[in-house]
Length: 150
Image 1: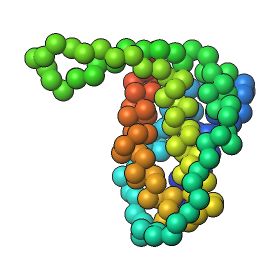
Image 2 (image 1 turned 120 degrees about the vertical axis):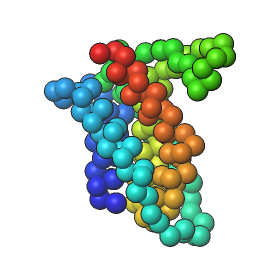
Image 3 (image 1 turned 135 degrees about the horizontal axis):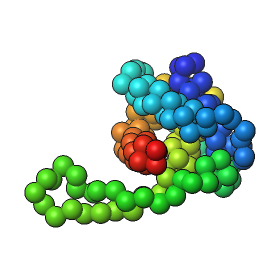
């Protein structure tokens, strides 16, 4: 869990602090996102049946603005919505790299908060749940956007 929390802290700094002065900022973020993705393959926990308080996203109201200040060129992009259906007409969608990273950061902050305020098992359970249903797609889309900007 210590390694996961360290990776989370390396990513969320971009949403908690405006105008960070970090060399190779995009490379640092990309490396951290890939490390976080790798952690998703090793989630093990015992289900925690306690009833805990819910995470309150409103305690971090400036995430999107801080992400924008740290990555001003994170903007809109096109994506193919049905890319596994080769012979059908392509469906094009629009994504937002700023929104992708902001949503990732909110998810990571909740994992960290659950670990600090609820239990390690609750944090890992939430990590598995939110990663497969939400964070993973934002992460893949963001990495693809970053690659296409190179």
